[in-house]
Structures are given as C-alpha cells and as structure tokens.
Length: 405
Length: 103
Image 1 (tube, one colour):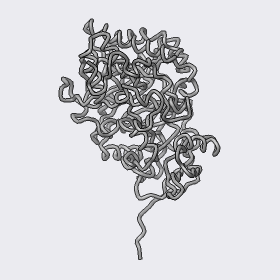
Image 2 (cartoon, rainbow over the protein chains, first blue to last red):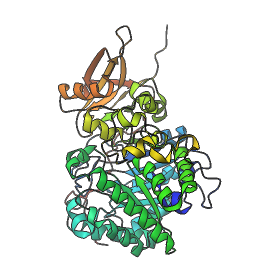
Image 3 (cartoon, chains in turn blue, yellow):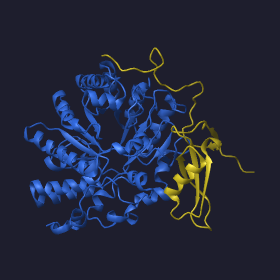
Image 4 (cartoon, chains in turn purple, brown):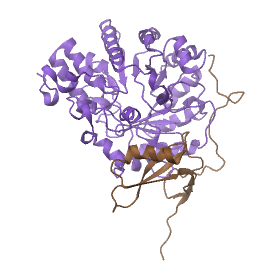
C-alpha cells in the first residue's frame, strides 16, 4: 500500500510504522513501533459469499466449499500467526460475515495480540453485528464499493448491493468502528471514480483504498476489462489530485494505492511537478523504506483450506498448508526456490525493470500480472505506465542514491 | 529401539481452491535431491506441469506432480485440535443462502 496522503500531505496514519518505518515521527498511535518484519496476513476465512463479483480474486461462490477451518482450527491458526509475530490479520473471504463464528475469531485474534481487521462487501453488516465486532476488538473495516449504484451492482452481480453496502458503512460508523472504502478500477467502473470518493466524504469516511486489478482468480478472466496503462496513470493522477483538493479544503482523507508499484515512481514524479525537487526526494526516501511490491515478503495470504499464498491475489500457487506445517515455518523456508527468487527479485528482473531508476521503490510491481500476461515471472509488469525517460532517469538525473538534485 | 514421533493424520480430502491442487516436486540440477516446492492449482496434470514449469522450470532438471488429495499426510504439528464433531461455521439464511440485509 502506498499512502498518497502521507507522502504528499504529511497526513499521519496508524499504518505509518508498517509502511514507512515512520512510527516515531507520527502523531497517530502506531500499529507497531518497529519496521514491519513479519507479513500482514490475509485470511480467506471462507470461500462462500452472498455476492458474485466479476473481479473476485478468491473465486468466491454462492455455494459452501469443503475444507474450511472449524472454529477450533481457526483459533489454532491464529495461535500460529501470534507465535510467529504477524502484526495484522485481515479477515477476508469470500464474505467473512457468512461465518457465524466471526466475532469469536476476531475476539480470539485480539486476545492473542494480533490486530484484527476486516475486508467485507458490507452488505451483511447490521448495526448489531458492527457493535459486536467492535466489542470483540476489530480495529478496522474495509468495505468494497466498486462504483455508484448501477455499475457497482452490475460488478457485484446483485441489485441492491450498493445500497446494502452503504447501510453497512453507516452501521460501522454509527458504532464508532474505523471504516474505509475499497474500490477496484476497471473499464466498467472508471467513470465513477470521483463519485465514489465524493460518496466517501459525504458519509464521513476518511480512508479510500484504490486497487489496481490483479490477474488472479476471476480477475484473470477479465484482463480485457483492465484499463490501459496510460488510462491507469490518469486515474492515479486523479486520485492524487483529489487527495490534494480534499486536503486543501481541510478534509483529511487517507488515500492509499494498492496493487501497482509503478504508482510509487509516479508519485515521485508527481511530487516533483507539484512541489519541487526536495519534496520528490522526500517522497522517494519514504518509498525506499517502504520497500516496493510486498509479494512474498510483507503480505501473505492463507486461504479457507489453509493453503499459504504469496499474496491474496496469487491463489494459483501455494507455498504449503498450515494444516501440515505452521505458518511461520512455511514463510521462513527460503529453500523454496520461488520464494527465494521473489525475495531477491532484483537479480532476476528483465527488460526495462532490470535497469529502471525506480527499481528499489517498485521492485517490478506485480509479478503475478507479468506471469499471467507473458508466462515469464520476471518480465515487466504489463501495467507499468512509466515513460522511457522516467525509467532511464532522463534529463532530471537519477533518483537512486539521493542524486535527484 | 527408536520411539516413533506422535504424528497424526492431516485431513486433506478435496484439497482445492476451488481448482484441484497438485503437489510439485522439483530437482533443480541432475545430481540434486528431489524436493517439495509447494502446490499449483490446475484442472489437469498437463496444465499443472505447464503452470509449475512457468514458476520453477527456468533451471529445473525434473518436475513431478501429484494430486494433493492423493497424498496421505501425517504430521506432528499443523492445526491438530480436538475437532471431533465440529463442522464448518458458515451461516445459512432461511433458504440456505446468506442474503443482503435490509437494516
């Protein structure tokens, strides 16, 4: 995740320590005082979902699946994460609220010292459920809204899904649960970007997560619906512009970019255009501490059957299964050649990524998109939208080693 | 006489997410041991081989694939709990489907 609001507007957030090793200077209470050494773990608690979204990375279905964890197994898994020192567990799905033990599991995670957060479509969050989750220790609810009513409901495969999600958001806010909105952009919903951000502000939400489409699960089936790289660049520019506009009006909305670390390079260029060289260097330095694409390092995923994945989007490959071996052992086992290669990807990146001046803050962006598009794990991400001059350094000189000035 | 470790059977029927899983074994160099490197999701052995080759095939001498559900697993670790009689905890609506709430 890349926080535009932190980088461009100096807006502090609870995740600064996780993302930028910036806990010490932040005015917000921090998730961790130390730089993140362990991954945030996404847990797909169930495959079942009450909606059928066209871009679902988890391939969620209306029907239940075999092999989901029992409550006791779920708690044993949370013990594994706590023992390993994972800072955050993200309860996801499918739709996690279809599990009737979700509140119990959230409470257990909090008791074990994990920070429990939620990813939901929002449609099943009643006021009572929101209050129960808050009381159980839930720290944050991210709710997906992929457009205004018409486009969102088409995307999500059900009429009324938008209104139900908004009611879920309102229920969270009414009980004082920190809540944010997640939006995954495609051709089908790009025209609603501004409308979704306006909705967020109108409802009093203060966190907006802009997701790029990754090519996993059903997302791999709608690659043709992804924006072109140039359209994506313009969309990211609009999000950056809106962040500045809202900030100038005194509305402190935290805006985050997820799923394409070409955005990191773009934000350095954007900072240079808008604020000058010193700001560009400061943004670069923050992003270098962030460490670029987190696949196989700062993000992990465990699906409903216990398979461990490199990110939540990369469900087609599993490092191992937590029913066989504890999560920490699987994640630390760099005798796995793929894990080792991804963690040392600088040695393998090809094409323009190999010599890109922004390699250390991007690290080749999505290896999953490269794999899905080219069949080669280390070819450039097809959604890199940087110009040749930006990749090479051009007339502005190189950002690497603080030589931008 | 060596005492056996207390391993227990790991339930692994119908492993898949939702596509069947294939355990992948790779011998990187001709003289290396064969080692387990995870699993891939694929509808067939041919597709699993193609998938595994994209992930590991750049220098692997041999790639073996095995349907994950055909592997009997015994472990001293994992999620071993006393779960007898427990079932998956998915909430059903009246017709068996969770529904969008009105309130």
